[in-house]
Length: 100
Image (cartoon, rainbow, N blue to C red; front, top):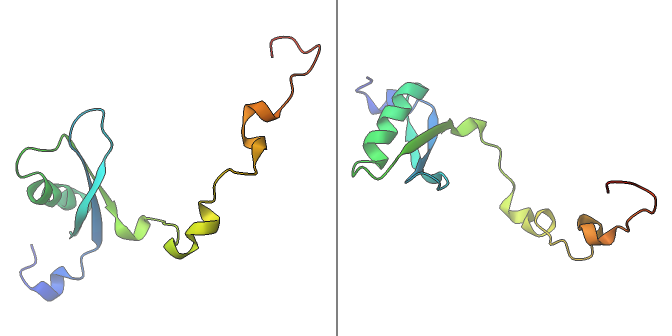
């Protein structure tokens, strides 16, 4: 374990996701620095589930996460309004096609 804080900052950043109980989704709990996935899991357990509130933990290297740009939210998340073809009711049933 690196005692020098400068050395610790060289460790990669990990994003931590915790699932509080079975059937629920994992939720982002925070971030931490660790040298590898195993240590990131152990540190995440100690930091984010101290009161036995978790059933599962995911750690993901922050560098591996791809995210959309919040500034381009309008075009990226536009509604389906005007895009009727996305719904089954848009299409007509073909005559003579069995099992459709």
